[in-house]
Image (cartoon, rainbow, N blue to C red):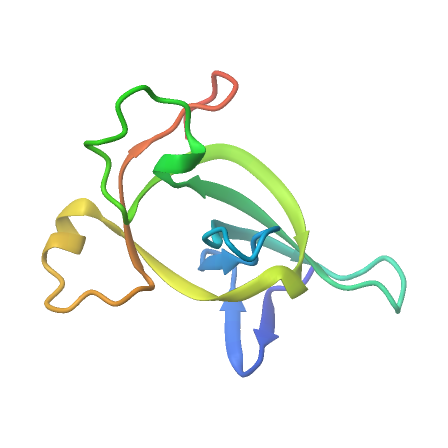
Length: 123
């Protein structure tokens, strides 16, 4: 198991929040919390990253999404393994209180006020 991974001069570590390249270029990047790095099984295999997903308002099933902010995320119990090549960059996920105290938020500043339940598990 790898503890850190360099992505074009950016050191990634367990616990970092990252943007993951979407399947379609028209979609927003996915947001994940790095749980673990694993080397490829063979020399030619890419290392992988185990992630817990954050969901955006367009990715959850809820009737009235009008009260959900554009930069609001929902932490889920959904875990997945991806190639490290899908990682675009680091981002910041703040609590809502901390997000409100940022003087100038940049596009990589997101916030999470609540947890989304997937398959009956809350994390």
